[in-house]
Length: 267
Image 1 (spheres, rainbow, N blue to C red):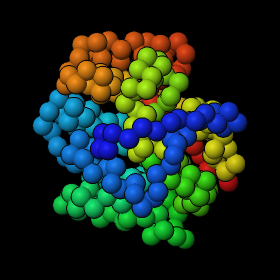
Image 2 (tube, helix red, strand yellow):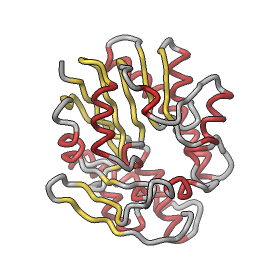
Image 3 (cartoon, helix red, strand yellow):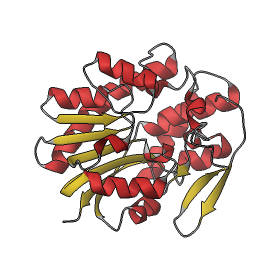
């Protein structure tokens, strides 16, 4: 999106995930987010993609808060990592959650602050703190130091607490259909590309996987972006068909465009 560089995806057979290669220098990573088209760091609503993104986001906020209450059993403390412009935390705070968040992007944190949500730039700001629920909505794939982050997450979640992670699935139908043009590869912002087995394995030491939920809207959004990468068109009926068919195939294979993984911290 930003530089036009080419990256390889290398399969790790032991872990069953793909690694973006070469991995950008951590200091250079923020430059790959410097685009008005990277809408998770903005509240933009102009254009078909921004409009669809913001429309679905409103619906998903309610679903996400329902999920964290369901997982925790009651309203409690919440840490959202990669909080973007703070809408999820704002919604959770409104219904009584004690909220904290992490977001390194300055533009996004400024927008969040205007909504009454103060975000911290790093997980290091939460040393010796623990939360009932920790969430990462399409964030884990962006984090450079994966092993270190997994260890930090384990320390942040209370015993018996919940860890909720949403990531794209490179084994979905839309990923197979679009191949190198699949928008959810999003190199090099996405450093890792997970399968269901890889996510379960990565967190198996300290967490028990309780359930996996599909994100059915992701296939449509990702397919629209993928078609844009191929043809330059801002809208495509073909993309809607691919997104629909990906969900149909997902019902058969349990491999959807993106999944939500709900873990419980072992006591």
